[in-house]
Image 1 (cartoon, rainbow, N blue to C red):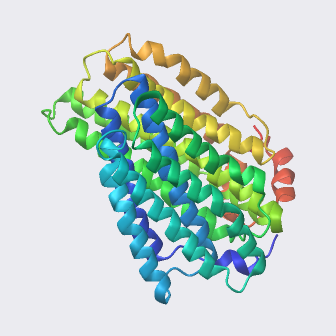
Image 2: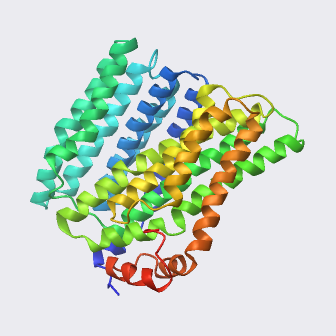
Image 3: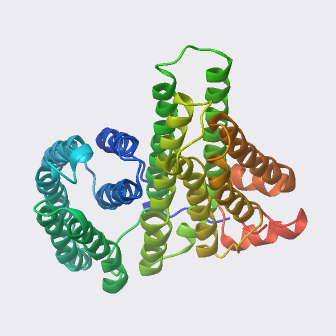
Length: 402
């Protein structure tokens, strides 16, 4: 069994959790934005908003993985970032019209303060300093393009947003990951907590959707089905995926570890969060209109959001060398197939169908891989890739392979 490296012992701090509250606020505003823009253009705009917010949050997750955010001037700078992120969140509902400039300027401040803090973190680390200098052009250019987008509308505005996010997301592929430091346990814990926070948005959607309705049998049934799906999403991530990912990350070293962290967390966790936000929209509409047929966009949110979430799980497993698997790819395809169905049946029935798919997936994995799941959870990431491979033949293939 691997002895954890000392750098993996770092834990998430209270200030990081405090910072995340502002991110949560911004994410809830995206769901509200989409609820009032149930069009394909609105869906694209919402995804662009999620992409921008996620990249800003992810930048600070990398930052606080490197330095202690609760020390001295760093704490004050983080507070400044929180203030700027709060303005970003407030501007979200009108980020593509009257509050576009406020969103862009505040977002620029969030990204600029991140670079300042990283300069502090890397003052005694030449490799880290060079890594920060490599991302500086993309961070400033992307944020500047969002400011410029505020002066346009329509296709030009969407194009500027798309280019801004493409610059951010693709720059790390071009510039490489040499010089970045990753403490596995802290990094995994931080992203696990943000998944829980995103799932909380779905629970809030249950409350919002039911707030204007009497608590009758239909409302209670929809709430129970909604929380069933949320529990299945939590289970699918925290039952074993989180531990296998941590083990893979801890197995890697140096630049390879940074590349793996980038791929598994900065890239592949974004569609998970986006999928949860989309599902929250579908759930909120379903609670409010359980007896009616869903429109196309809420149907895409209800079933397509879950499909996006599980598709990201499949991609994560492929990236860690676990293969395609069976349960999650099949669940993804079934959920995609339910999108048109959700527009033809009552919303409550559509929710019941997606809940059945999610529950069936969890039951399949729990019954198919009981030994491997128990072994992985009992070791909680303190195992090597080779150890995982050795347990597979003893009780059938492990869940990361099956």
